[in-house]
Image 1 (cartoon, rainbow, N blue to C red):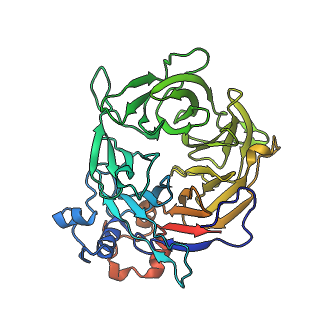
Image 2: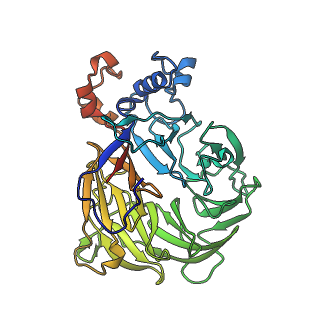
Image 3: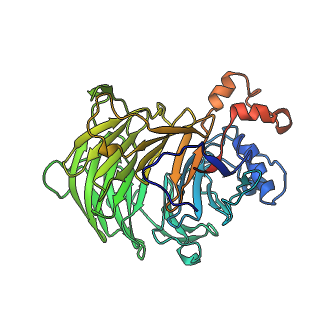
Length: 441
């Protein structure tokens, strides 16, 4: 694979090398049957409550999604070794796609991707995180953490989806289960789980927490308090800082070393509706965080219902360098942001991927920092953009919830869905664009 260039924008449109095709371009129920057929389990469309339905993956009881909803992709990420893509979709399934070694070989049509494993958790996942030492050629390392609102955090294998072990996250006084809304590894052997008003450190070798920090009452001086549901985490291994972002629009920075955790500083995002550098900002809570620059000196902050990104210099507590504009993410759907190769990558609700070249080096610009280049990948929202860790390869995940709109237009009849025979490919292209795609430049 070609090495990723950090400075030059592509001179030609991206090339599509692989995708999931039409497999998931439909409702939860229909895409389950298509996936089963693709994986050799037969083409039968089961009723949503039958045992066969559970095998096919369209039993949606308890996961908070209708079988008639679009089976859009909600998140994805490359494994640290660049061999595996892990995704979550509207049907709450966690799918591991192992990328073929001949991905970039010349061919007339893009490869059709199919999942290597499909795991159906008891409830919709909140977050996942790859083991930092993940190596496909070493099966014992092919592990990831997964958090769900109703069960303990689990450690699973992408090769089998089998449970390796679990880590209960409970309130120490009430013993009530606490959902982890964000996860990240602090080292090869320890990880951090974020729940409302608390950060909990676990060791992979023990099930019980080794450290709990209450974020409204941290054991540190100065302005170090954040409060509310922590929705995003980002570790900076060079500086041993981990950033935490809340739905109450606050950022906390914490020093970590091995299994220790200590509050460093905290600050609030600019008030929604205010003007920063000539840009009127909006937002309803942090959805994604990413470190940038040499030595992880800068922090990129993304929010729901916001067309902007905030760029902070962490060397100066709460110093806002500038506002990055043009994101096109005004909506409640979580659209993640990633920094790789000196670039900030973000998907938009208009099906575009936008890229900003080293915005942290551009100083203060009146009106914000505009996009450097864009490319179209979907007719619907791009929920995830993940850049290969070693090559000039980008994966995108697309689709959006649209059942309410389809019902309003009469797409569904008496609460049911159009049968597969009545829904042609043109209809599907207009209604659904739920795809995992892999591109090169």
